[in-house]
Amino acid sequence: MANYADFNLGIYFAGLEGDNPPPYPVTFAGLEAAARERLEHRLFDYVAGGAGDEHTQRGNVSAFERWGIVPRMLSGAAERDLSIELFGHRMPTPLLMSPIGVIGIMTDDEHGDLATAAASASSGVPMVASTLMQDPMEDVAAALGDTPGFFQLYTPNDREVAESFVRRAEAAGFAGIVVTLDTWTLGYRPRDLQHATFPQLRGYCLANYFSDPVFRSRLAVSPEEDPVAATMHWAATFGSPTLTWDDLAWLRGLTDLPLLLKGICHPDDVRRARDGGVDGIYCSNHGGRQAATAPALEMLPGVVDAADGMPVVFDSGPRSGPDIVKALALGATAVGIGRPYGYGAAIGGQAGIEFVLSCLLAEADLTMGLGGYASVADLTRDALVRLG
Ligand SMILES: Cc1cc2nc3c(=O)[nH]c(=O)nc-3n(C[C@H](O)[C@H](O)[C@H](O)COP(=O)(O)O)c2cc1C
Image (cartoon, rainbow, N blue to C red; front, side, top):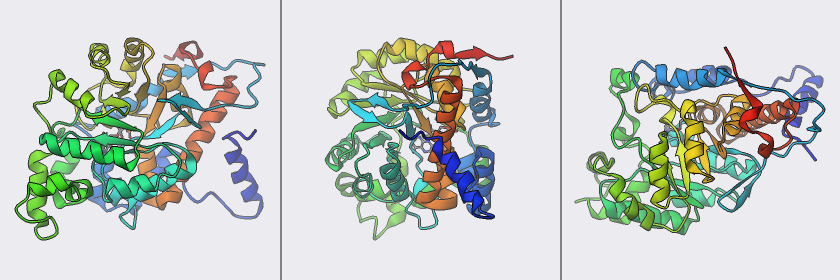
């Protein structure tokens, strides 16, 4: 049986053919530097930046550094199994690609959602597809191949549009709905404020809205005739500031598909979600882009305990294989990758994303192997020690 770490051997063997380094950087720092070179500077800042002084997003990353993975010897981990079970699907890896609402314009051809879907199809790593897409969700779903995908819903304050999105996601074949709760309005993002720029307000990544019959029915003239008016209508209806726990029954009633709530970090919120009949928790602080100073990894063990067996997806901060292993050991069922694959898309489209996923999986696999952990089930909190 092949291990994901065999990817590394491929790089070394290719190097034997002459001066043949890998096509893209193998570290997060390298990816970020390469993406900075490639992306228009305001778009790069939109992706790389976050809320307030950006200590929150730096803290997401440094939170991982405070844990060590204790290696166990002679435990027979020469072959590893990274697969997980999620909502009845056997997934080959514990990774997901977190929703990135500008991924559509991060590739040269401005079809980044399709590139992500194609990388999902080839890698088996599910895509959580943002509401904010440059191509309509039906086209993106069609590019997912056999890999299950999830549709991430930003709940518009027009409930009939929300319902229409969910119906379309079901019809397109998505395997679950992720409702993001932490972005009912936009965080304070100094880089974007300084540039006075926000991609969607310029009409980007609104294909799901502009192709939606209910959204279109709200407009005096079509988005093709008056894109600015359509974009302003989007801005007026994007968030759902009045949504409360009382509305969970409505959200739950929208679909029989697995329903996850994204942005949950407090154990009491987990219990409320559970009581309201959701199927999974997506623990995240939105990569430090929304509520400044919000913790993420620190909250994961409490979230897992409160979830009481319900699947917990975690994102916000994983940059490397060991980070993925640590999140799993802290109890995450699956780990969402955000900015790293976004940078992969920027520097190499589908191939860049595939390369980033391969690096992360190779390093996670090697971390498990050298640590003596043969399967994801072997990763428990006992595998970790607090450092410092
Ligand atoms: C540029 C960018 C756009 C994002 N767009 C969305 C989105 O449309 N929907 C959503 O739920 N989360 C969105 N997120 C948050 C990610 O899904 C994820 O929570 C975050 O990237 C995790 O942090 P990390 O990338 O630093 O690890 C976005 C993140 C970034 C960086």
